[in-house]
Amino acid sequence: MAAPLAAPPSLHVAATLREALDALAERGPEGAPFAGGTWIMRAPLRHEAPRPAYVALGRIAELREIAVGETELTIGAAVTHAALAEALAGLPEFAGLRLAAGTSANPAVRAAATLGGNLATAAFPAADLVPALLALSAEVEIADRQGAERLPIAEFLARRASLAPGRLLTRVRVPRRHIRSAHARLPLRKAGDYPVAVVALAIEPDGAGRIGAARIAVGSVEPVARRWDGLEAALRGSPLDPAAAAERARAHADEFSGRDGIEAPGWYRVSVLPALVRRAVAALGPR
Ligand SMILES: Cc1cc2nc3c(=O)[nH]c(=O)nc-3n(C[C@H](O)[C@H](O)[C@H](O)COP(=O)(O)OP(=O)(O)OC[C@H]3O[C@@H](n4cnc5c(N)ncnc54)[C@H](O)[C@@H]3O)c2cc1C
Image (cartoon, rainbow, N blue to C red; front, side):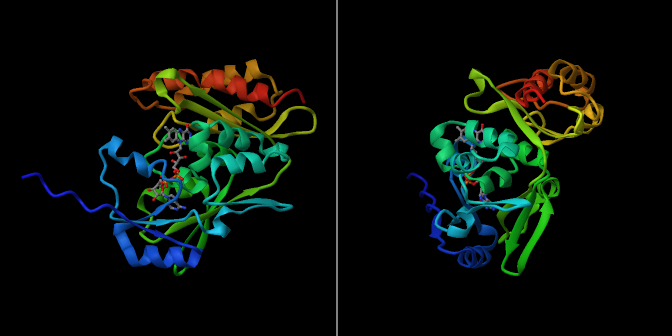
């Protein structure tokens, strides 16, 4: 006799944030948020069992809002990559984030995948929005029934795999500064829609056409995206010169230890970083 089929997961469609937090709290470790579903729906390909219960976030209006304030950009967790790219069209300082959202995956995925899902998926190293938001010094808001807390994105990345059940990423807050930003990613035919390496860059000009401060983040090379401290320090005070920046990147590439994957070996991911830095600096344009 064939083994009985497992019951399909239940789906609760929440209409408000409060309802979602209550539903997640009631379901405890059995439950999880369901955002765009682009990661969850591929669980069988990864040989993973789905959670018994999901709470869908897509109908919660406040999680789909994008607010452009004087000092801060606030993005709801259920904003899709496509909606984010569209909303950032008139904000040149966020050119890098716009490119990250507007060139990730493919149009069908961008129409469904959300900011919250991109940041919350600890097992997904090739997320485009993560390095883009690291370079912008974004902060993440997480909430549960008891209240909300705000933490730097790097701290969220370090803690996300062990977030207590019932906790939801609700918003991302990005400070508005006098910066220029860029996003360079390397897709390979073999890697499908995933980039094998990503460099996200945000620079504050010093007024004389030099780099006053640089924030550089690398994605998809290691299991979790992170800032490139050595290169940030090396670029401070230097001119906006793509070839010189690539040269400095080469000198600091040994800060990374690339992850091996079916789409590319680790050494290859590290070896393409200088070229991505060159592209990112060139994309900033002349001063
Ligand atoms: C073929 C393919 C290629 C892709 N390529 C890229 C790419 O190159 N770059 C890129 O950036 N993205 C890419 N994506 C999209 C990527 O899957 C999503 O960006 C993201 O990882 C999942 O977002 P989602 O909204 O679909 O989340 P879901 O699949 O709904 O959820 C993913 C996980 O996050 C949790 N979660 C979701 N929202 C929240 C929240 N608000 N708070 C806490 N936990 C939450 C869920 O419980 C689940 O564990 C690709 C997707 C596919 C299918």
